[in-house]
Length: 170
Image (cartoon, rainbow, N blue to C red; front, side, top):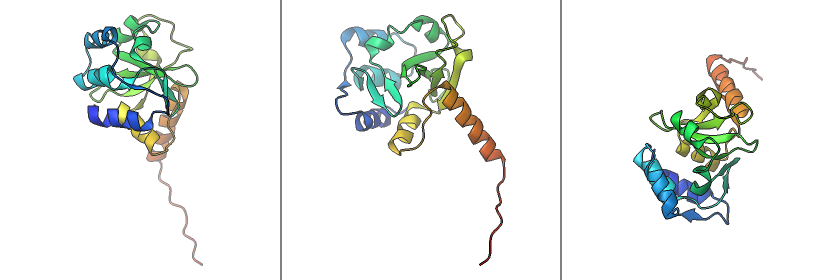
């Protein structure tokens, strides 16, 4: 993860009225205890929304809310870190087990606590920066578990099929 790219894109894309800045001392201490990459740690501590902030279809949550997510300990044990919500209520999370900290969704209709959050997770982007960059470019971005799953199925199918339309001569 690139701290400078992520912080600049968040600041650039945040709706007017979204305050970005340093978390409270309590929240900084909570993040510091997490076993996460240092750039992600500093982003969450120093350059993260201080209140709910919509970027694309995702509402990023402040650390005070993230640290009190239902089943936060169980989700963290699965190597996932909640960052916010999609419009349907699916949790937008960071996959801490991947090199680039993939981001995606936990299906809120299927996950009801416990240590099986990963089986209800669908990756959507290689990294948080990839998501933010797609929003910045005005591209389609999945907003929930099903959107991400269906979009990736489509992309996989699209890339595996050859399309050679006939060329019409005038």
